[in-house]
Image 1 (cartoon, one colour):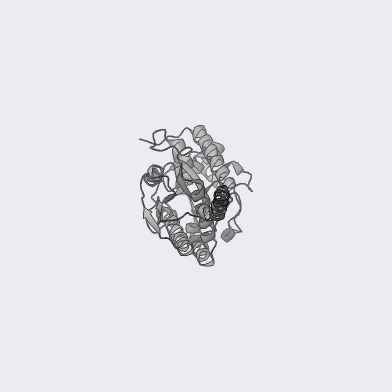
Image 2 (tube, rainbow, N blue to C red; image 1 turned 90 degrees about the horizontal axis):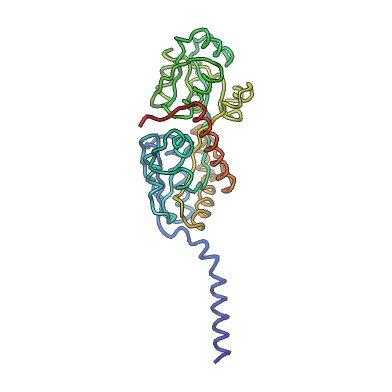
Length: 325
């Protein structure tokens, strides 16, 4: 009897040992939902849908995209924070929702540092400084000189109050002692229209949106705010190259999960998201959008998010800007 029990115990231990890798790979066992904090049709939505479709194909599980726009992304990211932490609800996080908005407001219904697990970096959206072709300034130094000589004629536009472009604009005002007025618009398209109509003197907007208009001779791009030159704008210097690295900024998109999500779901989502993102058919979607994927190891990406939160909290404090409630 003792020999039988011993053999049975050994067999059971062998079975457990043999199935543990399978258990570790048990995620996903049901459909996954990804909450996009933007309306349909934008870059983040388009990229997430392409990646989600490839994830579904690779994993044999449905990936459902749910758009929850509003309040500069706060509506959607709040829904992610409040979702069950079971590994089956993920969300699109951004520079704004995870770093800038929390620094601008103390009354958000989520804690960006405590309520989310950063899982995977999707892409960075470079920011450029563009002017009308008619403006008598062909470089950043010329723009600053114009702003100083024409304080009542200098307006700049961004996607809205509290956006990364807005903060970069205020940093420019502070650093160079100019008084450009902020005229927010609801997107890159109206900013470009305002530039071409000479209603504003500076637009701080995304590189993909401005590039085509620069190539067409409709606007002039003076500099990029991203740390490195934009691949599609290799002839345009960065602010860092011009000696103003403290003005560098790029909007980024990522995937997060609610805090408490099981480790196997976190590692699985990281693995599957990056795998789908780097698939040839997904890379074509990035290329068509004028963007590049930006995969990172999960530990490095989580450190990146913390560093961005610290950086923008410091900038907001320096500028003394708060969102109106």
